[in-house]
Length: 123
Image (cartoon, rainbow, N blue to C red; front, side, top):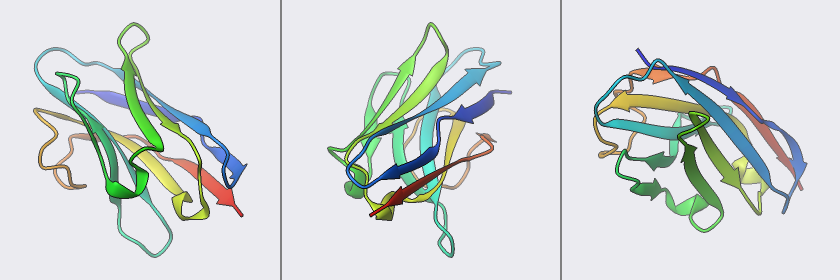
């Protein structure tokens, strides 16, 4: 079973950048979808970005053009580069993995979740 470990959260000002990291271990073979989700107080968990084994990326509209998901296969680390952050991006961010493909990209049916890392953006 894939194991995940996140880091990189913090507090920043609006307009600044932050990079989240998620180490991926115990992965064997086959298609694997890696993704980032977030959850704000009082809201449900929402999709942010996903990365398929073939390199296809998916972004939700609120983060398109500002966030970039990537995977370093040497370090086995998934990243979420977040630029031009705004207070609406404040949330607990989770990485997740599941065997297979990313579509449909919803918070349901994931094999493994990270513990979450907090991102706070002040205006």
